Length: 350
Image (cartoon, rainbow, N blue to C red):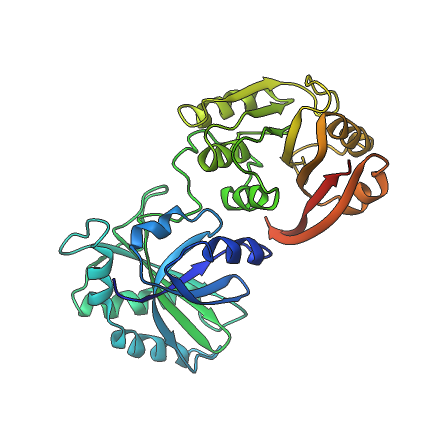
């Protein structure tokens, strides 16, 4: 199997989780990680990379266009340089794991870090025009919402260069097939998978999500360890109904119920892991005693040496409210929905 270079994109702050998961691939080498991007060489089957849970997306990396500035002359540089990349060879590589038609429909996805005197649409148009001149496919500049073309050409301006790649899968890795029911405030799947990794969840452990929402954390846990006993609780019956749809056929040992995270219907010292996305932002009105009562309750149901991983912007309040056997271990700041929040890891001392 050829040793191919790949380019991954991930949520800012999840570098440690991405690196740990990538290093679990035995045929992977030359891993380098920078802000939101990682590059690695892999000589295994392309389809195996689609099992990644912490990456937002993964691309065949074709290379970089240097000397890209903020002025409009850079548009011509990008257009004139795109033809030197071997797109035909890359399409042949992709066809080893999924069907690529002779004249594929493609989209050009562009992101521009920093201010420029040109926009994403202009870059996409220049790149697409050159690819069509090479008769590599048909450009669809505005695909229908929720639909995906045969090929996604990815252009990302970073500093003075543009990175160029082709998406490995038909759709982004962060889009999970189990997500059939959606509600506002649902957790990003790759963040949920990273939180479970931080919780050291493994086979045979029970896990509780006391604010489960639409069930993303539970679904990721079920995919990783289908035989584990999983419990999901949420104060919203609408969220529980949605979680049932998303978990159908995925988690045979999950129990979902409507309830209050401050008064859990669970016996004392019976849960090995607690992983939760606490309500924040516009999801819920501020409840000033929620944190303290919540921490007391999860301390009650958690076994000795159990682990808690929470996503929250209330790190200072949690630290001040720790008056139980729970001990703060580490915080991982991440960027999510335009703001910085923390993934917090705690343990219950024996």
